[in-house]
Image (cartoon, protein in one colour):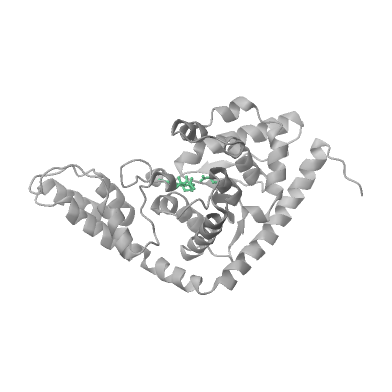
Length: 324
Ligand code: ADP
Ligand code: TRP
């Protein structure tokens, strides 16, 4: 069975972009791939969160994973920080990684352009990500489109290592990106992101979700006039609706006398129907934290076995002396 691996930073509360762009794929792949899904909490440190916040978000994301259908019987679920082998491999990989490769990383450049003062963690972020992936010999990595370049960097680092040590130590992973949901737009029309304040959260209160949906940016075409059917609301609606239902909505926009407010209410109804079972499941899990922590413990044990064995080979290859 091929191995699928992915991670999400617990750097905030997850949103429907994370779900449709990433987690939904993890869940759908569970029967056909050996899955390893983790919480990238070392990566989350790059934004220097308060310790208490990081812990709270970490618990939030593991609850989300489980509520949304990741099944610990099928997939290995763990915290990155429970497998410190990732960070050791990251150091080793840093020594075959050209500076220029990392200097070209869009996500780093975008953050700097936004005025974030970069720290070394943020700069070397892609090297740790390469370690996360390569240490498990992952075949595929399901992610949203914004992670495509990080996957390319991972492949470049693996190639560089294999060439340097003249051995096929690392497998080159393939990204798995679902084009139709590659970039879920946020309420302001930009990419939805935890860091841009433009999200719709799966597990917020209905009141909060309504507020988020009502804030979706639209134009000011008067109510009675026909509207461009390909607007932000339609795009979000199409995540939850069948193609026929999307066509019906578009027809209403074209006909006029149908406002964005009406469409947003329909979107809210669809959202609530879609996530209702997951929201109920999450409530159950919150009251069962021992079960949740046990899953993480078991997941870490399984992951460490694989990562530890791979790291042994790497240590030997690069010449870190081992006494028997
Ligand atoms: P964020 O930008 O909200 O901080 P992350 O960088 O933690 O999200 O992304 C976690 C996963 O969710 C990644 O696989 C990423 O590609 C995916 N993802 C994030 N935002 C979106 C979006 N708007 N559309 C599609 N996928 C997304
Ligand atoms: N960089 C990813 C993101 O922001 C998170 C991540 C860290 C990841 N390590 C990974 C994703 C390994 C896939 C594989 O979304």
